[in-house]
Length: 577
Image: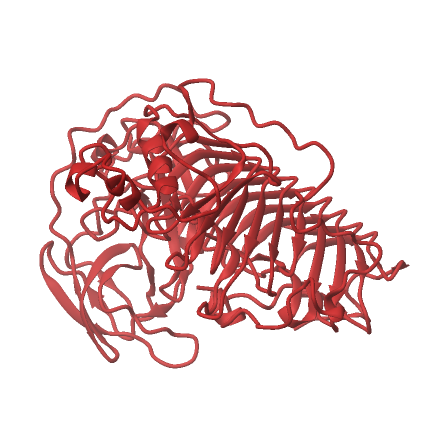
């Protein structure tokens, strides 16, 4: 995880509202502790067009700021014991659950599959055992405003609002569940992806979420993107709801090692042991899991130093025959010709892969089964001890007029204000992210299509790292303590980043303003796409390093000022690693 390298611990310095060093400059006026990010009316998020609106109070929530346990219901003789209570609330696992979070989970379960709205009246609601976890699709949370509707947590919970199971939760990974795609398929902007085995498109249906992986940094941070199946073709194509954001052909595999000797592919179901490279630039293979070796997708059986035993999988039949017809035809791309012979899951047995064949984390299509999609929130304040908002593994989330506050206690180590560890489509309008102690945030692991508009960041920074793509930060205000080291990280592994018309105030000393090198260091390919840095107004003491970029990366930089004076693009005031 990126933060373990950049922010091993959130620095325990004096609270923002108490230390003179972190008093904002006059140009930036942060909101008072109980106000939303901006005084302007927030953009409206439409309520659910389909499905009911449920009121949290009518479902039993109290919202008086006290951690009322469900044991109070037993004391009031509403239920005899936990088992009796579970007849109405089967998800409650202990009497430590609060009535507020019990009502919240009840509301989530009561909404139909196509979704609806949970209205949360004014009050401070407390979760004590399970937390404010969504873990389902098509949910709208509608508060009365960040001043009035607050979600907080007790001492046993570290995170505030959590959209989905973390990172790979619900990903169908493993050699028998992944779908390799053709070596020349996956070009940037293509609206389709061709599987190596055409019959396996029958396993997919329109509307399913998938992750398209093309290797990783080392064998850890995934390189790829979340996408949605729009349909299939008899030729073995997955038609995609969104054209591919980057190049995922085999030639662009983010590889991590190489074979040190030729590899002869065994028969399906059989194994082979080979040596792999060691030393600078070559990374240790995992002890298990699926990896790509050249065109082959193989399973690690065991690893001992530079020796690894790999199995060629013996696969189950496809779920029916190929030939599902898409509801729509992909635009702007001619049909791909049907190959005379299917490629097969892997190249034929006895195919020899030469020494120095590239090895990477599996290059495949992965089905996603617990990724929360279509989530919206408006008019809430959320408190978290270690993380205020965790939207990892989410797809299509939107936040307006929300205030996310990280407020750790002495027992908390590490953490983030916001954690977006993999996902796609996250929009923030008129929101604030802040901490009582300085701590970073991140979007990482190929999270794509992120936007912040008219937002406020206090005692935190903005971090796009680990293969993020298509991110925008505009018309926002940042107050960044120097202890964080960087104000805005525009990682060199990330592409298509736009940082425009923001106000950046540095407090307590000097730091780097726009930072590209502070990112994963072992990836083999930097992401394409321009970096745009326009019309940002910086107020900072001393002589901060404004641009810490790479000379070989396309950048469009203009109109930025430092302490009311123009600051030039990379040159005399920039460092090129």
